[in-house]
Length: 317
Image 1 (cartoon, rainbow, N blue to C red):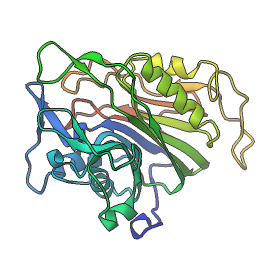
Image 2 (image 1 turned 30 degrees about the vertical axis):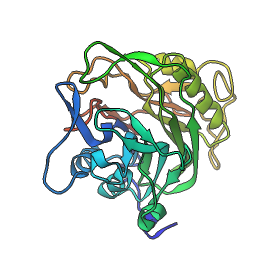
Image 3 (image 1 turned 180 degrees about the vertical axis):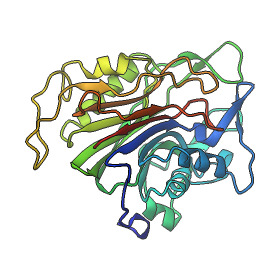
Image 4 (image 1 turned 60 degrees about the vertical axis):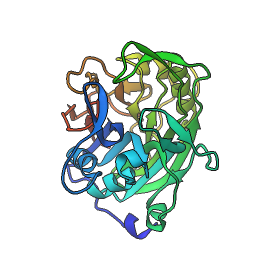
């Protein structure tokens, strides 16, 4: 544990924990379909830090996060967001290393591995090469971290690209999943941050991979992320037979004789994209080991950044 990961009292909401997932578009917003920086005083990280802090989440998963990128002011966005949200326990997982090009696309850095996990220690040491990935921030103590690279789809796909007319053939990028075993009021539980491929079918395969990858971690398990899958589809996928899916024997937490519920639940069904007028839900919070009706509140607030709305859910864990 580093000096910036000291003990923290955790949430004080009568036993409720506030979870959030937010695709932050590297702290930018869209103007006429193009990503542009939000101009405010105080530094390039301020709009992102304020937007994330406004959620007042105890556990927050962030997607499309920059680390040391020129386009976002060379800032370690995960570290800045963690400090601004009073979340001392955090990690950032790089999906890939390289420099974002001004007109779109990437200049890869071949000397760096595809997946690398950064935390307070690396930030204090000033380590790193420009990269792009996901982050998981927590006010609750973390027992254990785990990260996994998710390979890109092997074939390109035509997409609507902000600022460009018609369809653009786009190649998928590697993705990452980041899991943490947290100390809850009732015992340990698992939270996973993820950002899945935009390629249909391939994102389903990635979701099943993640389900199997966390099957040995403590329940309840909560998945937070931009799945690039609409509506009820993620829950249907997670409910399919396989490791961590389908009907399972219920287990109890240590010191608790009440069995945990089995099966995956979609904890919030509400549109999150596009931010200015949400029509479809691409961002999700799903869980197993959570009682039906346990959700205390669901919010999709508007923020000055991103083309996605954040999704916020409160749970008694």
